[in-house]
Length: 102
Image (cartoon, rainbow, N blue to C red; front, top):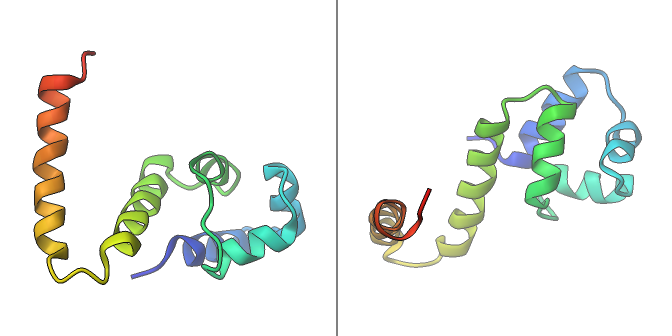
């Protein structure tokens, strides 16, 4: 399974874009983008959305990868990680149906 950084790097390279070109569109230093691609730094949600546009990636797919990775890193060392994910899924359903007014 690829990380967000690996997905970004592979797509950037397949499009023939340089780090500095993409970093310029994001208004960040190319060293920061390089760290994101190497999974040494986590991008912001805004940067993920911009990267999806720049790299012609599906925005929802990239956001799912980004958010799931954030959650995974948060709970990876917990013995009850699977239970946490199941409980979180139920909590999201509850919040969507009971608390969040559309």
